[in-house]
Amino acid sequence: MSKAIVFDVSAPADVQAWLLSQTAAGCSRADLFGSLCAAGWLPQQATRMMALTGEEKQTFGTQAEALASKGNAQVPQPKLVYHNVQVDGGDKWVRVLQRHTVPDVIEFEGLLSDVECDALITAARPRLTRSLTVDAQTGGHEIHPDRSSQGMFFERAENPLIAAIEARIANLLQWPATHGENLQILRYPPGAQYLPHYDYFEPTAAGTAELLKRGGQRVATLIMYLHEPEGGGATVFPDIDLAIAPKRGNAVFFSYAAPDASTLSLHGGEPVTAGEKWIATKWLRRSVFE
Image 1: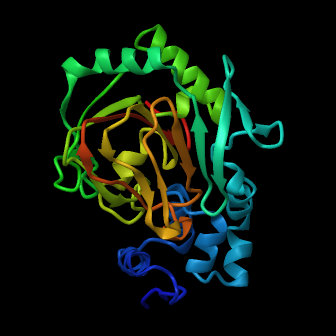
Image 2: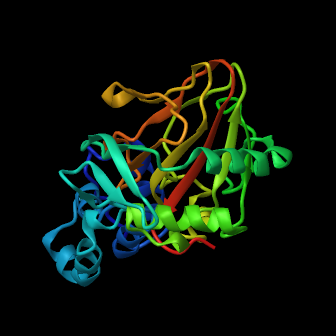
């Protein structure tokens, strides 16, 4: 007797296709639920997309309740003080220039000093190579035409400067430094850009399982501006019609509690029209990144 295939028809098409294929392959409903949550979907979302019956909820309800208890709190979240205009970075106070709540986007002023910006650029410059993107099918990395910058990664706490910045970020976002990917430096020469994209790993992509082994889903991004171009280079969020100018020392933070377009975390880097743009990027993971 074939196994029943049940899901909410309003679920994303790729999730529906994945549920169909995994069910046909013999996966249990409980395992499918667990896999969706492990990939970054909130338990409430997995429950809705799978259209769980009352009996199913009772059968593996303990798993659902344990995961659901984590809820949306499991994302980095700055603790705003002084009328929501400052955040404690541990070694300095950082000013909030603007905040959007849906999605959660915060622009910070003066997260990095001019000296720190210059030091990062100087250390990174001789190590730059063509920037890579994640290959969703293999879990590896590849050159992609949508991304035309140059970049490199520092090792965690590679030197005192990197260690200090990582500690500041951990304090600022209330998220352990161990849960962050290595700090990436990117250089955008004239004409370079990064077309709108999502930073989370697509749950149904073939390579996602491999990517998740190193720290789980990405849950937030921090972009720090090291050098201002003479023209262009804004960070844009098309879904909310927001553009943030790349001001030296400033940063933009945004979180995404689930790997889904409903988070409105679509973003990109507009083409640099004159001069160079340099940024530092820190991606935050659900758990320890190794």
